[in-house]
Image (cartoon, rainbow, N blue to C red; front, side, top):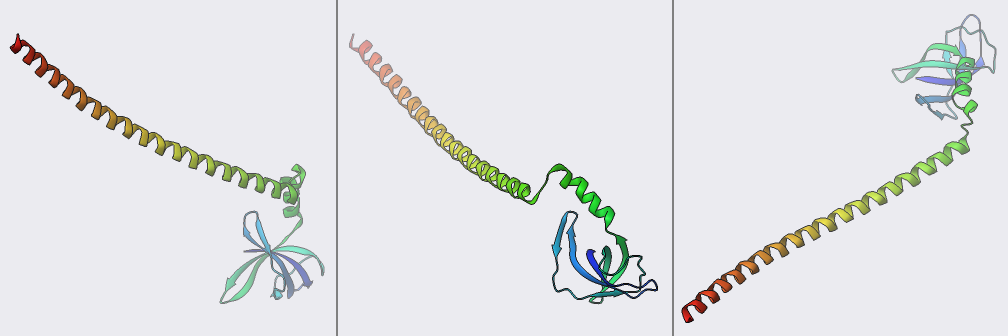
Length: 157
């Protein structure tokens, strides 16, 4: 797991103390971690106290073990290039999230309307089929009565 950390105490011979500020949850998702205890490591650093670094950390036996400490500058420049150079601000992201939610709700309503119409159509189709069956039965009855009538008329003549 990667942490954004501040160097509390640095030594060229090791025994660097890091104060974690945030941890990476997903590729572009970080969470702040206030009041996290300091992490001590034997990795030597070339920056002084107060500098920000990216620390790669493994958890072993409920203890955090620093695997690597990297310069934060390339990571920050990458963030600037990917997001801030395109005008992607927190307000923009909030606005886009609201638009996406409105779009999702609109699609849900449209989907419900389409389903309602499909049910209505199916009910009407069933109704029409029932009417057609009744019409065929009535037509058959009429044809039978007509045949009987014609037969009686011929007998009468």
